Image (tube, rainbow, N blue to C red; front, side, top):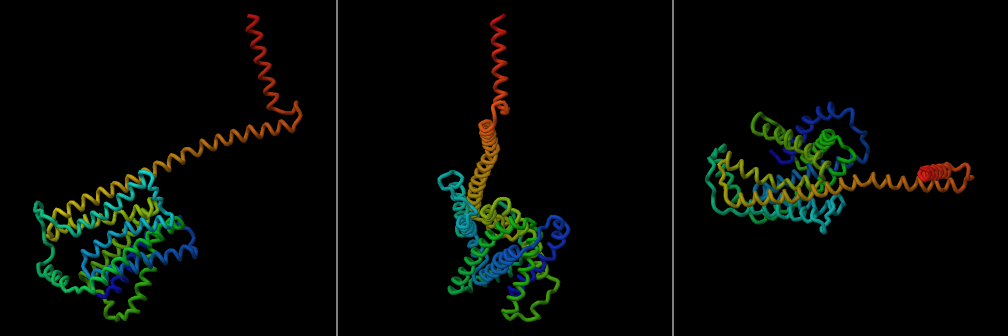
Length: 360
């Protein structure tokens, strides 16, 4: 199946799966669609859907799945830089929270590279199950050896382009989540626009009608799973996470995908597990801990500032009340000023108390 047709079917299935949730769960709280929201959704579909998927799949076709997955770990660094440029994230390098976020991002990327390119000694302590036939594994190996140097360079360019488009989508999604906080509706609308863009792109690439036929088999299963789970469920969760914690927080978990793939690959696909995979996984977890600690410290600082605001407002109100009372008394007669009457009564009461004490 052609890649553009695969992307089009993926977003069509995602739109169909998300439409009922968007209609029944968010119909009472859904804000009105404006031209600005539609434009943001269009660019979310363009960068986060059409371009990212086409660049990613083309890179896999030209290089290999392992190389493309390794290049995808540049997403946290690119997102971090873009978030600082668009002022969605404060670096604050002079504070511990900013230093922890920067260090955690770099450690996570380094761990992902170690997991991918460093092998070391093989570990054999878990019994594996091979769900694929040996012939298919051999075919994949032979196909991976046939890539030329020109295809490798072109595939690297497509992989970097995929990371850049994905990071741009996270930035736009952060702005869209504030203006349109209904995640099911925004994701369904994004998938609908992405499917339209993918269909137009497929016809522009010269796809034939026979290629659009979908038979019951592995193609239908893969397209359904990638649409319902990959583009429906995951994008909705990412949109919610971006709204709560920001684009950098959502992108930091991207290298964790390599850890999960390495574990399940050794258990289900009988792939070999090396010491480099374990070291890289530990570095990724340490990097995630640093970033989460830095974000937590920023949250505590923000809460302390919010708690201090009411106290400052009370102090300002007291000063304003006293000054306004003095101004009223200055412009009014002496017998008409309530503050001075109150002061006279207080002084007379104090004099009576002193006289009573002396007499006793």
